Figure 1 (cartoon, rainbow, N blue to C red):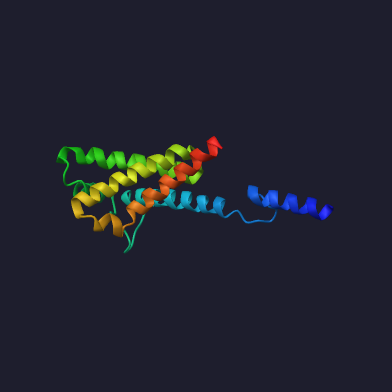
Figure 2: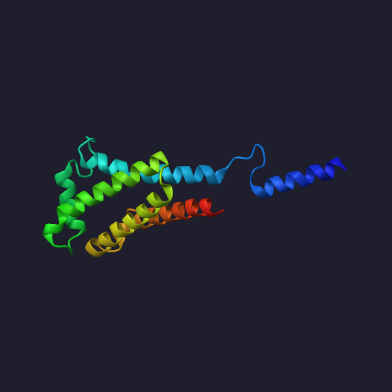
Length: 157
């Protein structure tokens, strides 16, 4: 009789995903996604403010980032470029910090997804579709969207 009850509790625990000793792959996968996205945003910020030195520097300083912003947004009027560079910087810093710290995750992830989709669209318009595909911008945007859905689902269920 106790074997039947034990099997029932075990099956119930396995169904709920809370079986003792079970590694929670979903939790660690979401944490990995969160940290990877946030760190990527913050790394870009560090680069544009000259915190990186050596061969693997992308922009090197904010002027270099503004020049890159102008190339990516070649379809925009020149007077909008400084605003776009600062707006992207503020958004990336805010979303990156929120993702790494784990605060306001639903909205930070959704905002990250939209921001990355805008980056991908601008890159595709200015450089062709190969550029955002090669730099995995669509993939990062999709990952942020999945993270957002995960966080919204947690609040509902």
